[in-house]
Length: 191
Image (tube, rainbow, N blue to C red):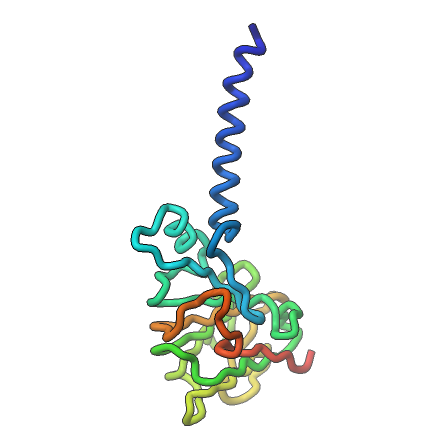
């Protein structure tokens, strides 16, 4: 008799666990779509569908830094430089890019907890209207603890940090075959 009572409880717990686990797996990119890594940048690729299902909608809203509707805003996140080393405030960096293929863009610094940086100058983010760009739209942003002149953003006090690069009105569909050359390089300087 006690075994008959335990079987339904085990079945329910197993069903809930498998359902929850499979949902997380799909949202994290375990099925078609999911995370796309291009150089140091990662984004979510949610294929366009006529009727997006619950998993496609969940992929769009689940991770905080990726909140956006594809084709309107695409958010790329970097935790490493272009050579694969973690971003750290112990080093300086140059974020180097040609003209992004989008209506406009922004580059934002977050601490390792995905909170806005504690920059003394309160400049957490930049865009083409707030920095000097070349006539062709190319730019270099200097990122370090100490002021390094034009186009400077201060890295956070926390050792490791995160960068986001957002494209507003991108002119390309982000997919696994996207050309990494379309995104900024993150070049480590002196440490």
